Amino acid sequence: MNINPDDEEADYALFGMVLLQWGHIEAELINLLLRLTHPLFGFSDEKGLPPAFSRQIRLAKHLYRDIPQMAELKDVACTLLDTLGPLHKTRSVIIHRYYQRYTASDRFMFGIFGRQGPRMVNKFHYFTHAQIAQLSSDIEDRRANMAILSADTFRVPLPKARRGG
Image (tube, rainbow, N blue to C red; front, side, top):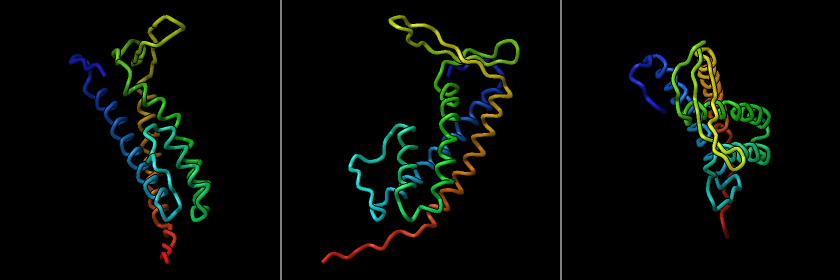
């Protein structure tokens, strides 16, 4: 993100809240995955956890569906996890694109070079202050829901380990 000293500190504080709140969501997701991939639940992927957010969501949903002990949480978990993709997409524009400053008509502009066939072109995304504030609020809401899901997931007892012979 390009920092301009003439911009309002409150704008950067708002962008920072989006960044920090999203960090909590990612931490909760990793927390869920660490529990769901516990060897006593039968997970045996030697590759470890996928780094891409969308693949982590896919894996978590798969595990909630496939682990019998998670049956009570499956629907709530999958519904909540499905809401994270659109927030992630919007958040990624704000955090990873080149901030082009506040423009007229209550709009922030974020740009990136993208491919259009063989040519590189500028692509711009615009958000109002209210849209970014709503994104921040939505992320905070999902973060709270992820914390509840995490607590509920950890309350599910691990299967008993079988002693070898």
